[in-house]
Length: 273
Image (tube, rainbow, N blue to C red):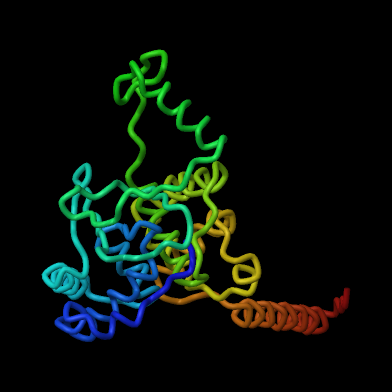
């Protein structure tokens, strides 16, 4: 995700000033979180994870704010395959060639003209290959006609939660490749429906190693169960807590050793090894 330009015309927008302060705030957060074409997931949880990372907000409050923004035409809501999405009209972000992994809004609400930059030779090859794959192929089948199982929707939710929280923390989207997709899929296998919440929680964690590595998905997968416990209990493990536990263990071992020496001395069998 590129840096955003929030223009001063927002300050004179009747639509912007027609909603309350909290709706204004979440709208600005959506401006910073949307993709290059002004699109964003319309899922209540994903919006909360992106706009209020690490903060508990009542879903009903967020739903009311979404409704207020839609009534003021600050955002436009559409659906694709029974999923809700948000489109921000009058987006005016022209910082790079436009592309999106989210479905296109209907023509009736889309005010962004199709001004795609000339594709590179590589993009031409990819588009041609994609077209050849689609020709003569029924949806849900492979080239050989073997039925292909639909993807787990929790995988998509987990990626959206991780990506939104990552963009909010670092100001840019995370890299997505085959390895990252594998980490997300395996995280869902290990944590089930809790995976999206844990993925977003992970981006709020200030563990020194996570911060140094910029919260990579391999660390998220590696510490999945521990992060799940921290998310469930609301207690983040810290280096200080680990050192404290280590000190307690050391003191405990010393006490056991002294006790053994005293018992041996009492029985006439002193052993200091």
